[in-house]
Length: 68
Image 1 (cartoon, rainbow, N blue to C red):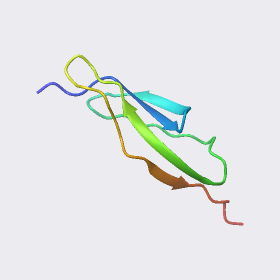
Image 2 (image 1 turned 45 degrees about the vertical axis):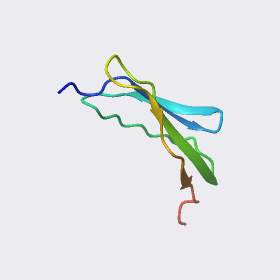
Image 3 (image 1 turned 120 degrees about the vertical axis):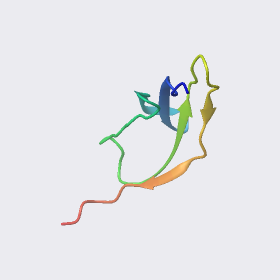
């Protein structure tokens, strides 16, 4: 079985937040640039030679202030 390759891009509306390259079918992306607020984020898989691209449903990630 061929593992999925390609790139996943994370967006909030029309704004690209970042991307990562799949390695053995997985990728890890993190950011420290989100402001304190609720953010609606989607992931888009670009596809590769053997797999069709797709876009996820959105998820809401809320960034809260650090406890004092």
